[in-house]
Amino acid sequence: MQIDPDVLEVLRTASVDGPALRLNGQLERKLYERVNLALHAVGGVWHRYKRAHIFTIDAADAIAGLLATGEVITDVDRGFYPTPEATVERLLDLAELEPGFEVLEPSAGRGAIAEAVAARGSIVDCVELDAARAEHIRAGGYARQVTTADFFSVKVERRYQRVIMNPPFAGRQDIRHVERALRFVQPGGLLVAIMYGSLTYRSDGRTKDFLARVWEARGTLWELPADAFPAVGVATVIAVIPVRDVAPPRTLRQITLRPEDFTARPRAVQQGLFFTDEPTAHGTVPFDGFGYGAPHDGRDHSDLKIDPNTQE
Image 1: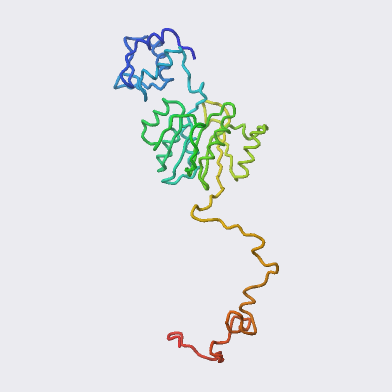
Image 2: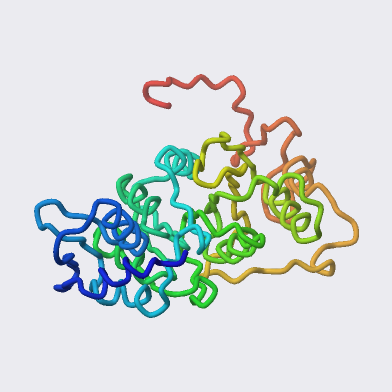
């Protein structure tokens, strides 16, 4: 969105002090509203008592792009749509979180999901490409680790019990992001992601392959209400994908059984060992086939009475 020249002039003459930006002089209401809109687009929030717009990063850095290009790149332009609170709660319910779980949120935005995850007692790490949004999460203090990077450049670590995400949708990026995020989930864990609603009826090869993978993992798709993302106005679903492949214990070596380890003629080992009419090769006495054998002294004790209190 192009910035009007008079708005740019106001921004150039503003005073900055760390994260605070203060406008100089008196502005007409309509001009102020346009200036406020531009500042809000890059993360500035009006603070009534400080009488300034406050950023999560240095204010000079926050508006540098505006002054250099004369344009505002909005969240919609970047394909970023914050997750509404009601949708966050649906995500977390489907994720079946437990206190102490380690959770990853890729493309974390401003931390709407991550903050709610932490509130439920889980440990959350975030990855966010936009530096201002990443700093916003750090300032919140609820994330254990915040990485400012492209998610596809982050080293894969299969350490998380849950991955919960609202990935970019444009150009079917949701499938690419979810496929990569699955590599971060421990065996027995879950990935829960908001995805484009058209996933359920697209017929291209990539979508079909992805749906086959969900089906194979016994995953599920849940349709969200039409108003789940009011700013977007498109159908969305929640994909819940289990990671079911179980890794063997590292301390044990798997033994592979071979056909030559078995005899050609199977026999009833227990029957040959216990149900015999003559002493066995193991030195045991004959059994009569009903679980009763001759006592070791060779005498018949069938009429012997035993006192259960003394066992004599």
